[in-house]
Figure 1 (tube, rainbow, N blue to C red):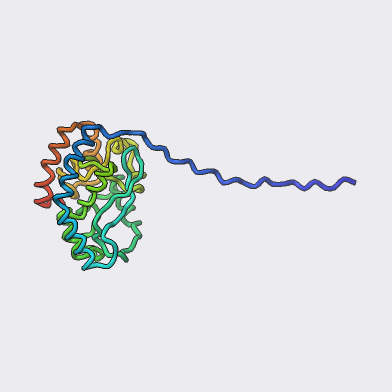
Figure 2 (figure 1 turned 180 degrees about the vertical axis):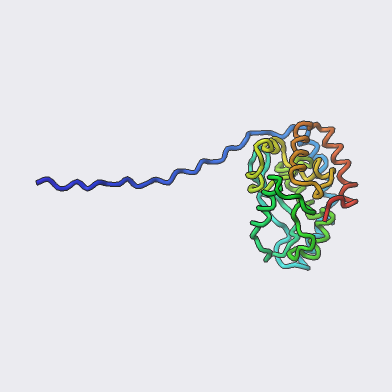
Length: 232
């Protein structure tokens, strides 16, 4: 008598996630040269300011001096952007409301609110944080990102990964150039612009890029920051 045949159900295999592919792009030599020629001396000149801000953050709020945040860089490759910490360490990390507001603004179902959905009196922001945000001093540590080649002085605003995933395909060209500390959006209203307007200005920069445009934007940036246009 033959033994009964017991059917064996194959064990389902978990599909291997597809690895992200990135564009293999290079920064133009002239742009990289401008970045280094301006940034290295600027870091030397600003070193006392950097030290004073670091000390002020340490003395007024427990926690690290720098805030490390993943952003989308050239060709879609991720990098870690540096900023002076402006919030308390125990600040809630749930950003679901911000993500929903961002999605609604992109879809055109929500009008842009003041300062790109940042709270005017955000209780998470420290006393020093309010000052360095209003003067954009929290962003000068991004000069180190420029030296490392992860950012340029001028370029599109570096997006968070979840922001980039929400962009329409037409805006993916933003990563064809290095993200920047300043850009057309910075000298055209900064946070007073809606997100779609900022994205369109980013594409305009990509299409119009030249070393002379970079120099022009850099010359306009300092007066914009001093006046505090669109900053809060």
